[in-house]
Image (cartoon, rainbow, N blue to C red):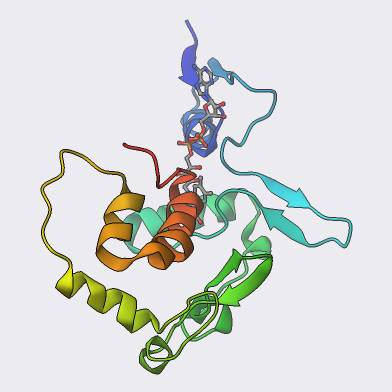
Length: 176
Ligand SMILES: Cc1cc2nc3c(=O)[nH]c(=O)nc-3n(C[C@H](O)[C@H](O)[C@H](O)COP(=O)(O)OP(=O)(O)OC[C@H]3O[C@@H](n4cnc5c(N)ncnc54)[C@H](O)[C@@H]3O)c2cc1C
């Protein structure tokens, strides 16, 4: 009787890997789509750059982090890791694509006080809007509408919507 793993994303593939390491040789890994990897989708472009459609970072902290790094090492992939230090420009800068252009998001206190595209006023003004927003009893509302009501259209559109799309591949306007 084989051990059956449902789904060939990183979880299923990792489960299969550890089972094999424990000498369990009768494994069936069932994948519904025509490829393994699940959300992990690395697309190599013509100029050799890699566009990640899904996850692209790991934050190896504590024992789970060590475990992940050991797994990467076991698979002979250590050379492929690009370490990013906290003070690196990549870690400090966040870009969003809005109105056909890339914009860097405010990332220092002083930048909260300046008008920075695509926002039409300093981000701090949007955040302060929360203090004057009157309480409202709502039965349920989407993350988008909640943010829009408390911080304004631009925060919902340029901060929260990309955040929900980028982390959860979800739609901030939907109800969860
Ligand atoms: C846009 C985006 C960016 C992300 N960025 C990061 C990041 O930078 N760092 C990070 O750590 N995490 C990130 N995440 C989260 C991370 O991608 C997921 O937590 C992880 O990929 C989940 O892996 P999984 O194997 O559990 O599930 P999935 O990747 O969803 O894989 C599940 C697999 O199961 C298959 N399946 C489903 N139902 C069945 C069925 N009935 N029978 C057979 N097969 C089935 C699916 O086709 C799929 O291949 C990101 C997620 C998204 C969407």
